[in-house]
Length: 210
Image (cartoon, rainbow, N blue to C red):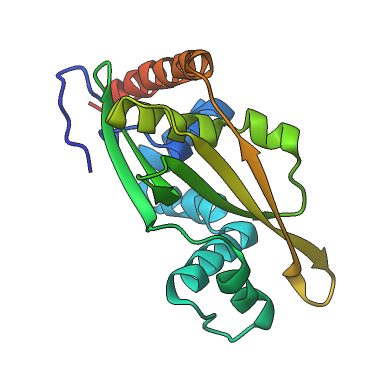
C-alpha cells in the first residue's frame, strides 16, 4: 500500500483507488460517511455499498477463477474457470505516484510480455460502447503507462452475463462475451483530470478531520 508521501496528503486512506474515485464522484458526503464518519455508521455504509449481491457474485467468480472450482460446485461458475481466458498474473497490484498522488489499482488479469490487461465482469448488460467508455479500464491503462512507460497493447473485458429471478435471485446465465478496447495517450490525459479533481476534493475533506 502506498505510504503517505507529501505533507498535503490528507486523504483518509493515503492513496487513491478506483472505488474511492467513483464514490467521491457519486457523492462527496457519502465518501465522508464511509471513510471519515462515525465508525459504526461507516461499517453500515460499507456493507451497503460494497456488500451488494453483484459485488459478492464478482468475488465468488474471482475465487472460482483463482482456485479452478466453485466452493458450492455450481457448474456455471466452474465453466468460467474453463472458458474465461487465463492470465499469467491474477489480481496484479500496481502502485504508482502520479504528480504527487499515490494511486493503487488491482488488475484482474495481467500479461507483462504482451502488455495485456484483462478485466472480468458480471452484470446484466455490457456493450462495446460501455467498455470503450469504462473509466476503470482508463485508470488501469494509466497505471500501466506510469509504471512501464508504455501503453497497454491489448485491453479486454470478459463479461459473464447474469440475470435475476424471483426464486433464485442473482445467477449466471452461462453466456460469456469478450470485448476488446484500447486507450490512447489523449484518453489518459482526459482521465487524469478526474484523478486530480477527486484527489483535491478528498484531501480537502481529510482536512476537516484533522
